[in-house]
Length: 165
Image (cartoon, rainbow, N blue to C red; front, side, top):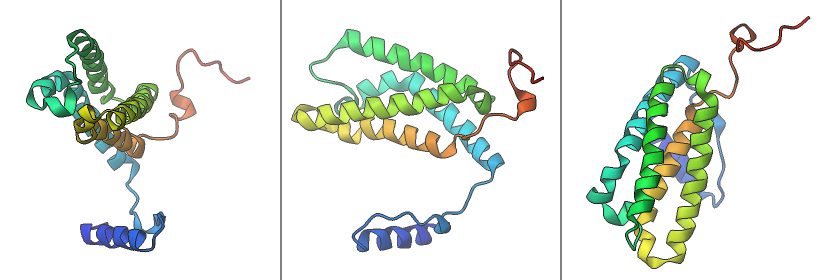
């Protein structure tokens, strides 16, 4: 689907006064292409998670909470750096790491929602609405779109699975 087609669809949905999803206008991505893009998103997200602490200094209003909480920042970025390493490793075989990927989806949605509510209730933190909140929601959205919904075939079941009689 080209940019013009997407723009027309978006304008029609907004102009109609109701949100509608037109599945027929969205081209389906092949499973191979989806996994290829998922691997890329996992690596990029993993590297960004590992390097996220630098954003505190590059764009403090979008990533740092006031008053400055150094111990909290060290803890949360330690967790995200660790998660980032595992996302890069998961890119080798995303289908074998679905639980990790879905953990990232749900934890990013929850983390982003909590931060959005905090930013909306305290004007000092409004910068987060254009910083880390949309970044977390973007990560979750991309992973939801790209992650397979099915498990591997039965012949690729875990070794500890019980055989059928």
